[in-house]
Length: 73
Image (cartoon, rainbow, N blue to C red; front, side, top):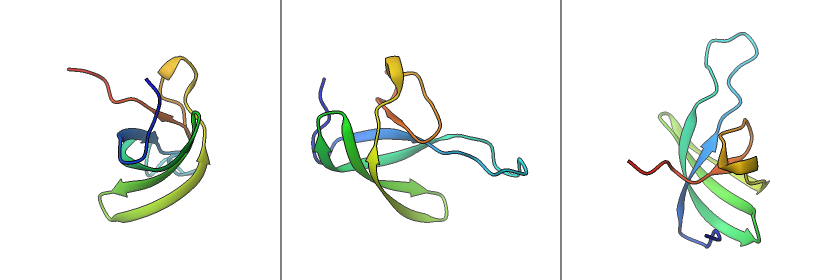
């Protein structure tokens, strides 16, 4: 499945250096797609952040700074 504008994906946050916040999946919407390199609007519990040129996580396994498809449940 290829990412397209408007699709919901997960963005894996980096967390903070001191460990106050651990890396965690964040809801995101694809705003631009060039193959598997995308731009995202990322929704955090305290606001929205915009990311560009975000790579797809290898094997769709969550990795900091990358996007992946949400797990099916």
